Amino acid sequence: MMRSCSLSRGLQIVAGGIDDYKKLACYHYRDSSLGPFAAIFALKATDRLAGRLGGEPVGVIVYRMPGPALELRTVATGGFFTGFDRGTALPLINKNIRCIARVIIEPRFRGLGLASRLVRETMPTMNCPIVEALAVMGLVNPFFEKAGMTAYVAKTPARCVRMVEAFSTVAIEQRELIDPQCVRQKLARLDKAQAGFIEREIKAFLQSYGRRRDMLPGLERTRYVLSKLTFRPVYYIWFNPNLEMEI
Image 1 (cartoon, rainbow, N blue to C red):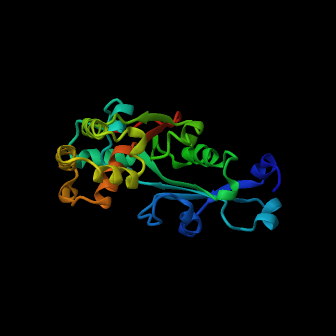
Image 2 (cartoon, rainbow, N blue to C red; image 1 turned 60 degrees about the vertical axis):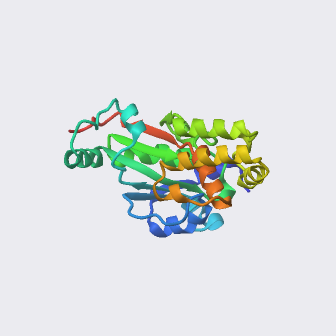
Image 3 (cartoon, helix red, strand yellow; image 1 turned 120 degrees about the vertical axis):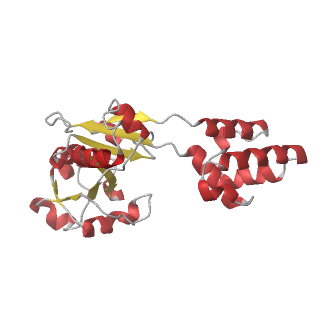
């Protein structure tokens, strides 16, 4: 493959569409269903490299309208969108914010800074005072920060802290909570008193998760509980220096 700097210069960001997203959706950790979107931009070869890379997208970024309420948005904006009734707050949020829903780079072209470039160069084109994003893998691959966004990490909920401590009490340590099979095997080996204790803790933990509160013991329930303990999305925000927030 050609040198990375030469390759990067031979790529351009252009207005894209749903077909560009579909071609790369299989490389994203989420399922491929996208839903409504506000804008899509694709990273494609310039005429100079078109013959070598073809017309297929190398990367894609998808913007959507923002969600109605995010705790860390309130923190990051100093409560700018709070204190309004729902009928007032939703138009205000939609006027001021766009959300990055997907950033995908084709695997052969990762490690070249292309994800950060897609974010950095497309955010201003949204003509919106705020761009935000939520990323499960943000702490592992902080390309949003490299693009100029500011990160806010959610505090671990008290119920999750309690559940982690309960697992530790029965010799299931935090480093093991990424492996549902391992945790399930350890649970199966607990004595009667330990098993009763951890079962009560799991049932109490699940009370916060709607219909999941009645899940039966088993690998599926263990996997679900662990997913909640290890799921800590990072919230990212970028304030457009050229636009003021509107009321």
